Length: 164
Image (cartoon, rainbow, N blue to C red; front, side):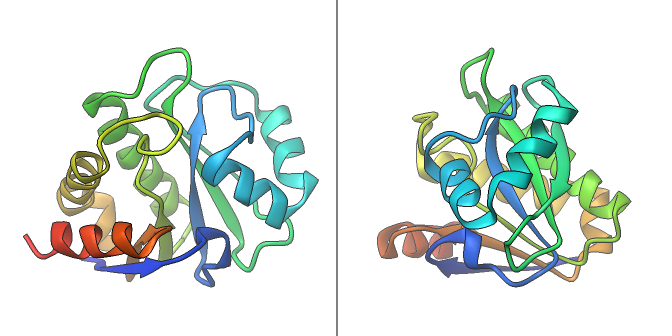
């Protein structure tokens, strides 16, 4: 089972194998986490997303990471054609873990899906994701799963969620 931990800051600085993008199902890297990934990783990530095309809300897709310090970006579509929901957060987290396992990823980082642009309650989204990671059979193939909180307050809240 993967060790769960928390870091504060910009997820685009993570130095493991993969980061997860809080994506829309059209894989358009716009604002929030996706924008930070686009700015730090360069245009190749969006180009790969464009080649991949749309996915369903609750699914995930994987691309290269451009100029980021990781090898992969997993795009977890917790929103888009549907509003963010408990279901979409859970399913896109599970889909991300499966892609990680399928691609030999051992160390990955998640933002709290749906809690930024999507407007879902941060703590509730983090709890849904924590439970999905703990319940997924794919977590057994991972060494590390890091949850990123951009602000100090978000990181503190994540620490509290993970202690349960």
